[in-house]
Amino acid sequence: MNRLKSDAMTSLKQIPGPSGLPILGVMPEMVSDMLGLFTKTAREHGGIAQFKLLNKSYFLVTDPDYVKYILQDNYKNYIRGRSVETGRVLLGNGLPLIDGDFWLRERRLLQPAFHRERLGKLASTATDVIGSTLDSWSQRIQTQPTLDMDEEMMHLTLTIIIKTMFSADIDDKILALGHAFNVSSKFMLWRSQQMWAPPLWFPVPRNVEYNRAFKTLNDTIYPLIASGRKEPKDDLLGMLLEMRDAETGEGMTDQQARDEVVTIFFAGHETTAATMTWAFYLLSQHPEIEEKMRDEVKSILGDRTPTFADLPKLTYMTKVIQEVLRLYPAAYLFAREAVQDDVLDGYPIPANTLIFITPYITHRDPTLWPDPEKFDPERFTPEQIANRPKQIYYPFGEGPHVCIGNNFALMEMQFILAMTLQRFRIKLVPNHPIAFKPEATLRAKYGMKMTVEKI
Image (cartoon, rainbow, N blue to C red; front, side):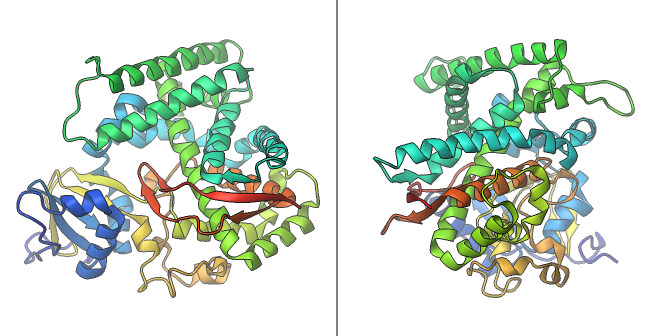
């Protein structure tokens, strides 16, 4: 018998967890240090734990076998559910917010657009944007050698997403789009943290600002969709509009296309930006690893701009990125909701229970990873990967709902690192504080102030 799906008649085990305060539960710790709370809970109570917030019970699952069961083996019983309801206001029915047959159809439609071969067509656009950004650094550091890499990466990855999504000349709209997206993202994050928020039509300042940004996004995106249908282009939007369901022959409606475009903006730029920020931080703390990467880049690329065909050759860089994603998974936390009662290794999972899953904790578990706080890219040699359980590492999720854009993100990261190492040395400003800002992604609380020097 599968030890995870025990017989319903088996005597059920009690799920342990912190006691917390009356009514509030662990709310004070959740607000002040969520990652600290979850880490302590997992270490003290094991791979499945229960805690309360305002008299409601929630589960934290970090055991990799349990995670695999929820995300892969029995994924149909564990949906996004109410954990993503706040995001629907902005993202509509984008792929990460839907389940069931609708999700399966959308996944089938979108999957071909994110195959590596198709992404290769977007590579030159990405490297052009990165090159322009690095050119601007060369000018700026002549008078101000310190840059905030958190801000720089956020701007760079958003520009890459916009330019690869729309090959039309929309340079005059990039600033407005970027501003609208950032306002919308911050608003959705704020709204998700409130016990109650006024309806969107109520004219409080936050709502007014959000509704204006929402209108800017739609007023820009819908005409580009209409144009893309009339004159198909070889960009990411064109790939999305080109896709047809293999069973029905149907493509996306304008509303679906809009939802997926905004979702790709949301999921595809901040996650990559956060990962790159932590990568530059780690490399500045480990110059021997940075120099090994630089040597690889020099031996394979010299001074030329990398192409899509070069990326598989950058094997050490790939290991570095994988290790950054282990220590600092941008998607550090997500949730699932049980549809029906279930039993997980003897533990009862009632229907409608909200379950938190956090790669950050699994990736730093000392029982799974030797010296887990150490930055060591050699963990990702083929031999090391083959000799450990696959499910202990899931920076892009796991199972059928694994992030569809993971290949795009990895392509972006390799280009950014390779082109930056060709031209600059980047060092953390002395005494700059390092702390987490766990919001939609795992950001640096105080930014990442770094000195940028030409090679």
